[in-house]
Length: 255
Ligand code: ADP
Ligand code: MG
Figure (spheres, rainbow, N blue to C red):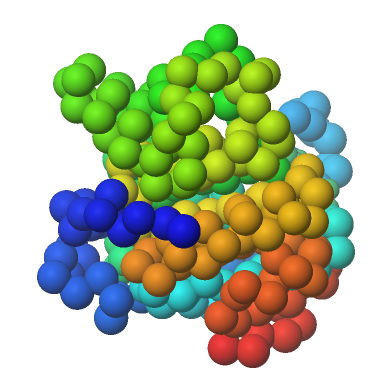
């Protein structure tokens, strides 16, 4: 289903082996713990309420594999994805992306790594409603300084690869849920990232549409690393390995 010609071997996290994505450990978590609210955040200062979301979580996602994260609501799946995506720095432990320790980087550097090397797919798509499918897909390339014609070409190629070549000028509101999620996947691939994190990517979709999205993720996982969180059996069935969480702890890791 997915046309691999859109995948080039250009990008790689600095320090990673450019010629051999497959043998690299794309993502490594070591002893990761996280407490929300411990540094203020949305809690009033002096308020002792904290939430321990992760406790000593360790696992790896090798290049070329799909790892599923399963666990009940509140078990810490999204927190792990955010830590891997560099959207939060965990209170303890190490998150490495292709050998690079994210916590050791400045905020600016972490943002740069996230934009270039991580593709994020959300449950509710997060497309900009006023932009066409093509403009949504091209958006991550604006920050990368890619020229407008090149952005349009790349976005068109990616939309064709996810089977939406006839929808490039449609607005998100003119697309079905499954089509929107395919646009979001195309957008996640825009910078040719090593790693795709997907948080409940089929949560809003019916079974048949969800299956199309999973087939896409399966194809993508052959050449990249995919970390997909879900509590849905069919989503987890596409994973090469499943890490099971309960109360922020890994209770099973079939790796
Ligand atoms: P899941 O994705 O498995 O449902 P989350 O990672 O979203 O789990 O949440 C793990 C725990 O952290 C839950 O107890 C949740 O309430 C809490 N949590 C998540 N985000 C925040 C936040 N921004 N502030 C405070 N607590 C949070
Ligand atoms: Mg979640």
